[in-house]
Amino acid sequence: MRYLLFAVLASVPLALAGWIGWRGHAGSTQQSASAASTAPSPADPDAALLALFEGEPASAKLKEKVALYDAQTLFDYVDGAAPTFIQRGFRKLGAAEMSAGGGELTCDVYDMAAPANAEAIFTAERSSSAKSAPGWPEAITGSKSFVFRRGRYYVKLTAFDAKAEAALPELARALRGRMP
Image (tube, rainbow, N blue to C red; front, side, top):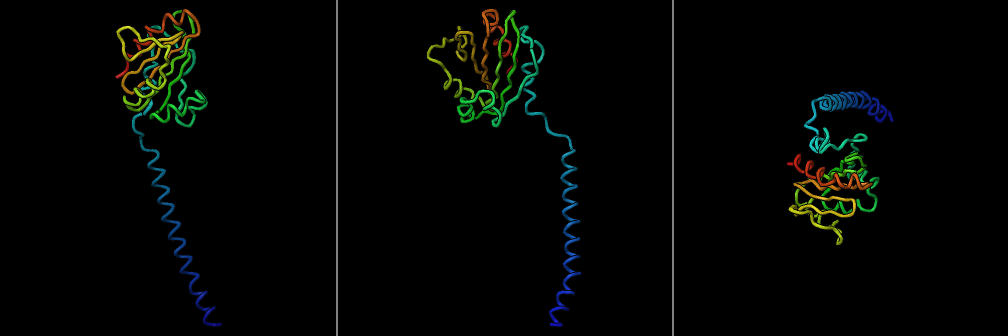
């Protein structure tokens, strides 16, 4: 019994020293992680998307700040259609309410991460009643809507009234001109 007590008492300082050493190492790891988080971050991946809305494309004015949606929050905006976008490589949506031509509209720009993804969603969402836009094979029009794709972007413009509907083609051309 004496030997057992001696072994336990002898191991306590060793265990304590090991624990202190381990805590010191863990603390230095946390400091390194916190120092890394204060380093400058790479370019904002959403900057290109937000830049499409800057200024007044085709005299269209933002009514509020552009709302951004990712794969987690897309359901809040398009609900049942979200899986269709996510399955086709959706990255981020920039959505804005705008005024143009004296009317109101929504401008939804989906960053689909790659041109093939934008083409896939353009094809999947195409309505049988949609009409091709003259001279623009990557665009379709419908009642109070103008939809097009360019590069990795898929854009849906939806007018709430006839005045905004008349402004849709000009706004679409202005947005297309801003896209790489």
